[in-house]
Length: 396
Image (cartoon, rainbow, N blue to C red; front, top):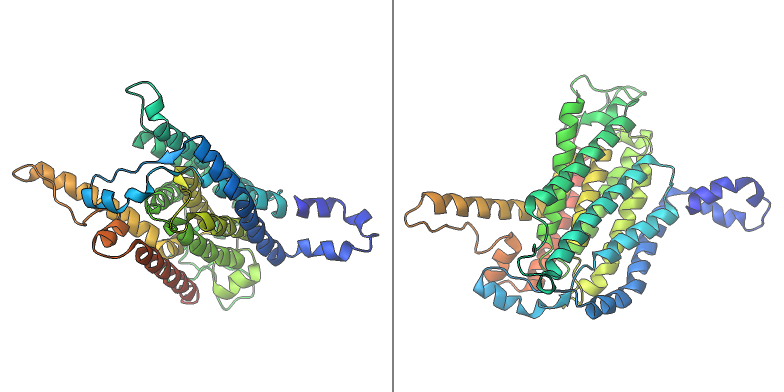
């Protein structure tokens, strides 16, 4: 908004002596850091009143892990306020609306994804948290198929949106494979490599939709310990922000032989706002947590990270950057599938488990790691994976 207002008032503001200070808003790097700081301060200022409001409304969590030892370990978290994700969503919105170019279509898409998935998360959290105060037999949250329907729904909408935005640029529709160049290095112009795969709409749609839905669920599953998910999101956000920095410049994209996507540089502002909001949330979510984000925060965060990666054509590198998220998701999927399979075909009908408890952060917790050790070590892995992704950008 501030950027757009400066554009509209450029002529008459030029006569004002202090105009030179405002011109810093034309610099994308300044707006990126300002967005991170704005989102951080928003969450920090609004955090305590929000937590008090959630406590007054008695919006507290009572987790049940179906594992006696884990229930005992996590017993101190009962009745901790949840739905704190509204702070994160608010921080992202305020920072983006103030500092991003609101005429940019990619920014519009990101805001739509956040609104959509935050709405799904609020509905799911509210139904879970108010089930005891409603009539007997009332639903305890959204059904799994309902959540997936909304997640894939926004995934397909986002895919169509991204596809149409890249109608005049084949690079905005390519499938970027590991170690593959997008452009021919010996040419001055942006000439695509003959081996590059330009996806049809029928391949583009499922790739984008599956990644958005999966990442949304993966971050949701990771949100099980104090500070774990928001810390990892900060790390992943900084990773995709760097990739957006490359994709938004034809010169930098040509140098690194990655797709140039016109307008993608504004996604840096959105990624920075996400990182700042999660960093501010960590102030209240670090151990012992005074508030949890709930599905209200985790679903839109995962969806937003994936949306930015799809816009800049970096789905494969996102699998590296968000490796911890996908490990958590995969551990839960593998545990559930193996348990059902062995219960069905074994005698007696008792399911077997791969991990002590899934997702995998609980496996390590039950194995003797303290909660703080699990969180910090997973953060370390997240940082290493982002560094690895940055290294891979040069291996073309």
